[in-house]
Amino acid sequence: MTESNKNNSTGYSNRFLLEILIALNACVAVVFQAYLTTGGLGNLFSYFTILTNLLIAICSSTIVLFPNSNLGIFFKKPTVLSAITLYIFIVALVYNTVLRGLFPLDGWNFFVDTLLHVIVPILFIVYWFVFVPKGTLQYKNGISWLLFPFAYLLYSLLRGELYGWYPYPFLNVITFGYQKVILNSCVLIAVFLLSGVALIWLDKKLGRS
Image (cartoon, rainbow, N blue to C red; front, side, top):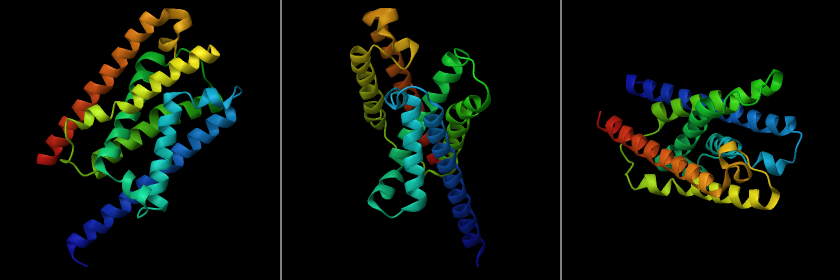
């Protein structure tokens, strides 16, 4: 076996192991959080954190188990992996800078919280840096990546209007009113957009180097 083939084999093995690690952590985090949740699962799966970790669990599990299926090929696209990287980065950013400490956690709740907001984001971002091919993204991708968070915001506001429950304090219309919540939503979309642009810029820079 040539040195190049050895390197390729090692790289593939490392990538496969990391994909398994991400899949296991994301699946455990979502399932365990569902088990620990005392309220309705409808509320649980209305958190952007849970939806994004669930997306990562499905993505990584599909790549590991069915890499050559249509869904596996879809999830392996750099644009798709980069979009998911953006979403989990925002999950970690918003939680650890704005929401952490609002509710005291201990025991298994702290463990699962750490998986959802720290471990899975770090693992997936490392995966993007090391294994996702660079140099293929276009700045227009940053616009299409906004569809998921924008749809999520609309869903949260509509569901909140129906049930009087909002997943995050900054979306709580009962507390802040629509004017403040819409402003908060615009700020959040701007954060997604700017972070997406920064990710694409980094992709281009890494692609050239």
